[in-house]
Image 1 (cartoon, rainbow, N blue to C red):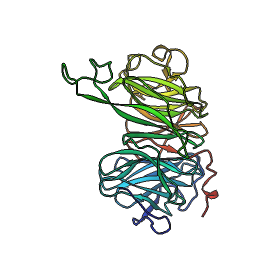
Image 2: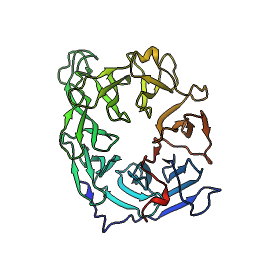
Image 3: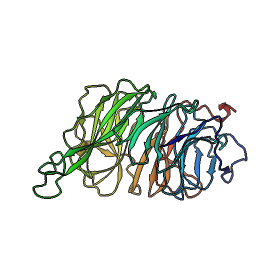
Image 4: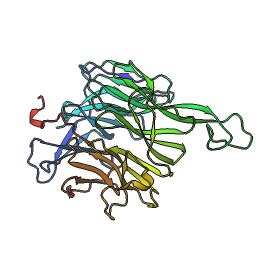
Length: 378
């Protein structure tokens, strides 16, 4: 099982090395908005100040380091560290690299993945020694922990914008059907004993109450749940079979009816919302006969197969994924051919970043509550 360690007794043993980018005054305070990313080598975490151009690199020991989120005030980062492919431990640290604390220690085949910071607690996928995955939580101030799900195959928890509700994907084993459109794909003619692992979405309140099943597709799987910024809708990808993806949305209340936004099968790589909740931006391949993965503006009415248009219609942006908007909506961070890129959404310009910042994971933005590093508690 995962071993929880007291915040009052355990601090991160590895020394956090802070390095300013060339041209950044040593000890200068970050103003924001901030975008954080890990790098391809997984040996450090980069924080880039879009407002000032300052760049800060944090290194916490020798493990593989991945940044997942900021605290609600933007003064801390949430990250995991692991010895290679071994299960990961969960940590927080100030954005200057100080006060690095281990919240949950991996061990005995158990670990932490996909942590997300809510209003007063962190939700994460708890990986048990026997391979079960459950949505769990920890309060970083007190070390109190709990579990939201118990079936043992849950993933991709995402907080609502106010941090009070959580959506996640829960998988079930279903009996195989006669063809790929029945409950599961058969493995051979006449087979009656095969099963298929398929997912639907569930929602639960932060206090563990009010849990309900949000989607209930008779076949196929749901993935990539994404809250609209106003908290009213949840976008997602529905796949009747593997890699045959369509875009959908649903209201965030119980008994809501899902709405299909596209019908032709594509390969969906990622999904996010416009800051004003009026549409979604998807990274997809084989969409509208375009084979490369590009960014597409998915409208909430009509048929995206014909009505969607490319977002940032730049021929050079042919391998784009992981779109993430800043809290103020002024900036879009994305990965293009594995490099971090920043795009100003109203001036339609690109912001250069010093150095080669290559990575394999989405960047994360400081929240709306971040008032600059000078306002962070000492």
